[in-house]
Image (cartoon, rainbow, N blue to C red; front, side, top):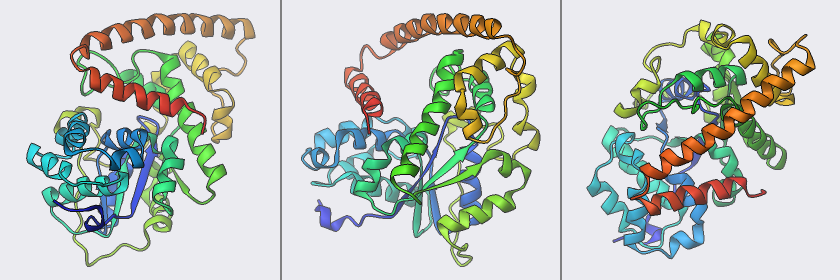
Length: 344
């Protein structure tokens, strides 16, 4: 058994994004271009640990730590860790958030092979935890993947969930899907305002137009590629492969504007209304709502909001049935949601 001082903490940077913003393409680009950077697939444990808090985590025993690790199934499905890895990590007494994440990253790197200098954790809501992360790891950089919000909503409404058969990532709910994008922009905006220089934004549209500009931005974060280092390829877990049909291929430039054909005029009008000034602030122009009478917009928005309430109830009922035998996991997710909605 080791003590906290025996666990070297590593520099952890974060990839933050709204769902369906091209983060997998960015992760692959970083792994291929910067061999000295280990890109770790997304898993939920960082959110659980940051919600629990560093001081409370240090006071936990091995049983509690093992439960924390087991509550995140993506450690197995995405990172490929085994139960013996989780048990070994849980035995480390007195570790804080950064040290425990370092142990997970080291176990993942041993499974994948390689020896890297930097670590990029793929965590969509990292910006929302920005204050806590920077308090524990000053100097952390947040690489923000930004994509047109209408494209994000269109993709969410059409992509099935990896862990819930028959459901889409957007819950078939325009209101909920639009909020995923606006809340991410709000979180990034607060982070940039309170911690200038901590965020580097990479636009999806620029990435699909050509990777050269994107690589130039990444050099600001990771420095020049270390050619003498063997890279660790980035790949998504088997369960989540269906979410990323283009993950092993170069992004098609047509995807940048595919939302224009995928969203109906009515849905597009509602999405643009829900996103409001966020679209313009992010540099995107209105496409659907221009020239639509106000009464028509009000009616469309009211109808979608009413449907949103019904869908929310249905979703909670389904989730309640699914997690009725996992009360600890439910409480953990509720704690994360409470933490995210707490004023920063």
